[in-house]
Length: 112
Image (tube, rainbow, N blue to C red; front, side, top):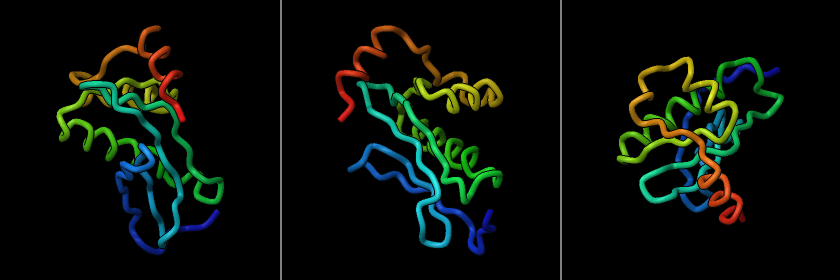
């Protein structure tokens, strides 16, 4: 497990529908989404094993959700990690929508 020498940076990469967390110039993790009207549907989050245990997933998701809120969108946590994060962080409760069968069907139809 490596320790970052620089502060991690979270970037929104619209072309790939994801947020990335970058450490020392390397992508250490990502959380993927698709926008559905006023909702940003988060469906997958991962952090490379080399960066495990450093709290990067939480930092990544917090900044992604903060950016989503600033963008005026609502959060739909299909991703289990994002759903777990929301349960522990009430500050996003007012912009979180439930995962519904309709959202899941829409998401399946819109994944590349």
